[in-house]
Image (cartoon, rainbow, N blue to C red; front, side, top):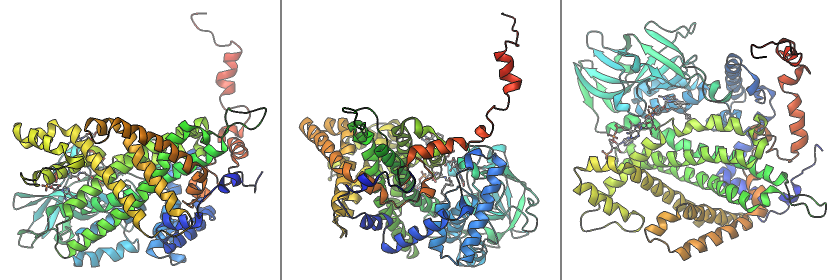
Length: 627
Ligand SMILES: CC/C=C\C/C=C\C/C=C\C/C=C\C=C\C(=O)SCCNC(=O)CCNC(=O)[C@H](O)C(C)(C)COP(=O)(O)OP(=O)(O)OC[C@H]1O[C@@H](n2cnc3c(N)ncnc32)[C@H](O)[C@@H]1OP(=O)(O)O
Ligand SMILES: Cc1cc2nc3c(=O)[nH]c(=O)nc-3n(C[C@H](O)[C@H](O)[C@H](O)COP(=O)(O)OP(=O)(O)OC[C@H]3O[C@@H](n4cnc5c(N)ncnc54)[C@H](O)[C@@H]3O)c2cc1C
């Protein structure tokens, strides 16, 4: 029945202060207040409904996304929301759109790579959305290999301009979000050519469309690259294709914080590392880690609540069947994901601190922690997105058949989320960057000091690489092992930062105890999953492995009575979850049944096509040669 909390018996089992945990999950009382207020504002406004997305055509879907983006902007302006509140509103609207790239990449690129003068010119226009930007780096022929990009930016000293050109088909910009139909401007990455000499890839602000009638400017060919994975899902985003035919831009539209070109045509490289041109990617990678904890916690919330509602087998003397959440196999699949959601939340908090710290150091021209920041953002983006994509799929399977319904919210969550393993850097390519950092670290330890502990194997690799023909050949030969080492290195960081979080003052009855259980589940689950490596390297004995497995089972029993409260702590509205299986009151079956009849296919009892195709079949009116 409506209004009855079918999960009340579960919520009454909780052994900790859920409201206090909500503050821990949000990050602070202020952050909780903003999240709670804005999520309810979005949930209560019919202008932000999203339950019809899977039934719309691509054009209807996209137009609806434009409507919502404009409505969101009007809401932000009318209610005078702060930048923090506006970001939260876009988050809870929960629809990939051109605004993600305008706010999430175009503006950060100007802030990170533009001069003060360029920031003063372009940021006010972007903040007021008088221009709409995208981040046009990837091309048809190159994405991972940024130094392989083919678009050219040739300086013309006669006119004090750059000529932006797409010399080949493969140099066509391909994938940039917001580019296909909306963006008026792009940060386009191109090979800088001055006086016939190349100076690597740099960013250029290029206007693409008229601000009067939105038509593409002279020399610009632009469009959408077509349907992507899954219905609805990421097809609300106009990922685009863009070609330049000798497009001229003023010299002052090259982002010149890292490198400069003078009006005399002199190229100057600032005394900052050229990799700062990649700074926007580093920024977004650290936001993606926090996004991973959000996406995984959504899926875990759905699967946990449904696992408490679903009963299957185990009835004694006509009594109720067993809740599937009480099966040890269900717990061994679900609870490590619950622990991962919390682990990724805290590593995301730490990475945000690391990024802020390196940004502050860069202001003072201190580049000492830049390599570490690159390795951590790259590696943790890779680790958390892979685990989250796999985790969402596991949550779908944990919900049995009903997990495959769109109304479960899981298929769309999966379809929207999985490109995170690719965008902002293919996850393997990023792990190779971590491996390169680890090898460089080890080689710098000096001959007297041998690495010990979890990087002891690096000595053997180091030796192999040096005795083999050249370090580069060794690296390529051992890249599979090095990628595994990179993952292990990143997992060490996740566990270490979870443990550090527990050293902090954490208010609320039983809250710290619950987090300790989740931290131990996260760590012991990893130990169990990789016990072969730990045993073969002598890090643990078989007895240790057995003890760890016993402890893991015990921890699952400890978290079981608190599972519903731990996902309630995410404080997601039913609107944001978009899932009947994950609805707060657990009243699943009536809602599933009601939703089925709303499907367009059920608008008529007899389906379109019956008279044309089925009736002739049934009436044997179709003669085939064989009969
Ligand atoms: C609030 C935010 C809200 C929303 C966010 C918005 C959007 C996100 C949501 C959805 C996604 C939507 C859009 C997605 C956008 C994109 O995908 S943008 C394009 C992303 N593309 C990539 O990530 C490309 C990946 N490739 C690279 O980064 C580079 O090519 C490379 C793999 C790093 C190799 O570069 P390069 O060849 O130049 O360098 P190397 O020779 O390998 O290394 C040379 C030294 O440089 C160091 N290095 C490399 N990169 C960096 C860096 N970024 N920072 C610092 N240092 C770096 C490297 O370690 C080497 O150092 P050394 O060993 O000491 O020599
Ligand atoms: C939904 C979505 C949105 C996007 N939005 C944007 C955007 O807004 N702006 C933008 O500029 N780009 C965007 N991109 C592009 C994205 O950044 C690239 O697709 C991504 O960087 C991967 O590059 P790639 O496609 O060249 O992959 P590839 O590098 O071609 O990967 C193919 C395979 O090759 C492997 N591989 C590549 N190099 C190596 C190596 N050295 N060693 C071992 N294996 C290797 C990879 O691991 C992978 O398995 C988007 C992509 C998607 C899917």
